[in-house]
Image 1 (tube, rainbow, N blue to C red):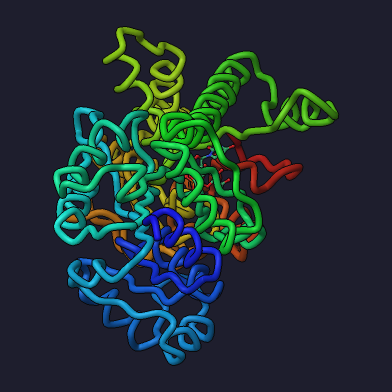
Image 2: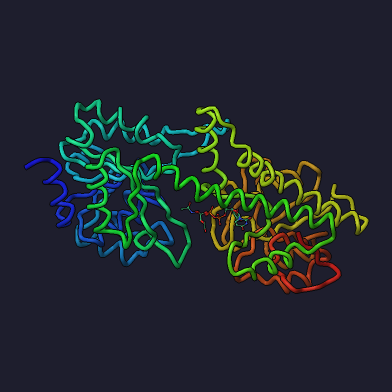
Length: 434
Ligand code: SAJ
């Protein structure tokens, strides 16, 4: 039987063996959903701790329940290892490895190309390969395809190659891997057919597009849309501050428009490893094609300037209380990059803390999710909220986690600067907001 027909049949009957490369916040939930759909799944990761935990049925992600993982492992539907050679037994392999930016804002494909080069050594006739990592338009066909074809196998005939962006939103309790519509594009029509045959067994909705480029670019548009709109609302916050207008009231009023408007909210800056990063993939590729995407660059500069704006507002609040910033005690309330997550990577709180320390302030923080912040001379140790606030000169709310005693904070701290409007509607002489 032709490889395509055989592969399509074993995908549609879920007899196929599935491989997942990279068991992080995207790969592990995908592995679980594929296994729950009835496939046997082999997950490979270079992190031995992840492999060990998964095989012990221990989940290391809040979004993946221990009970579900344990059941899949105990029923031999899901197994992990670090030997890529085992992928040669897989009929479908999804690649979910990190795609960070270099300091120069150029894409760093080290993990993707490393995974693909190793996979190519074990690629067998009739295998479907799906790249899931967020990356610049063209990666699948310009960077991944040539490496896989070095195996001598031909795409669309001997093996099949697709791009399908991961859309996992950590801590999102409403949408998960199975329920988020899955975009997929194939290098050839046969590739797309195989990709759809596979993911239709796992996801509630599969969204085919005409090419891997369209799939790669759709993902980037999603997060560039967020980054640019966050930049717009941050700039609106700055101009409202200058005009003495309450930007939060303005956004609330604009949100009553039942069409044509979507609220975003100002904040201390842009954190996380998706939204601040993904638009630069688009910029990088666009420049290669001779076009400078100015809006993306400008929004990125506005968002990148928010930490300095926050520091300047802190300095003004202290100044109004006749206190120099140098020597003042500043307590940061919440340092994670967004509400109710423990991730402080790329958090604007890191930039704000560093600036304040460089200006001679004494900086402490409290955050129910983040155990420690920064390293070396910039490291901050976590302290208890209310005692620290009462001993500070100003408390600054940077992340609006649930379950924090903000009213108690307002009663304890001499000054409170709320950058997230978590004390919405509260008026107090010692309270100011972005
Ligand atoms: N932020 C604002 N104002 C806003 C929204 C966000 O300042 O109105 C800040 C956040 O505080 C954070 C940063 O932007 O520092 C990014 O926040 P985010 O809500 O976009 O959260 P992320 O980075 O976890 O983005 C992920 C993305 N998911 C994927 O890429 C698969 C994004 O597409 C989701 O829309 C987003 O989660 C989400 O909605 O939670």
